[in-house]
Amino acid sequence: MTFSGKWETETQQGYDEFCKLLGIPDDVIERGRDYKLVTEVVENGDEYTWTQHYPANHSVTNKFVIGKECDMETIGGKKFKATVARENGKLSVRFPNYHHTSEISGGKLIETSTATPAKGTVILIRTSKKI
Image (cartoon, rainbow, N blue to C red):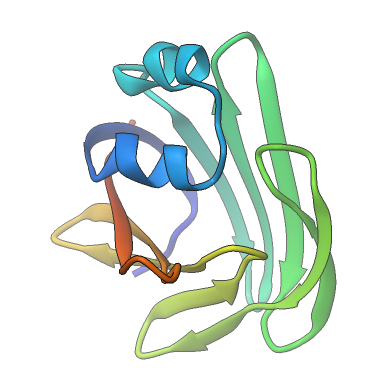
């Protein structure tokens, strides 16, 4: 199934703990907890444009080609190089502090971010519906 389209957050599991681990301030965590994040994806073969629209009119857009190193950016504005892989319909990429996968399951966009600090694994699972 294609990732293309607009997706709106329905549920988030592990949000607070994951955000705290990344050093996001408490007031930003509070504002974002119930925010309906909109993810907009344009897919053209192996080329993707992936935009996430956050509160306060903040957006982050990453453009990438499967299997090729590209410049990416985190929500906090940190720029890094990464290669996005596709396996069994899932996209996966290593961010500076966590590993991120995206897949379509049951018509929903499921994004799983897994961080493994010294004190144990922290997982954020965001489920979004197509709008």
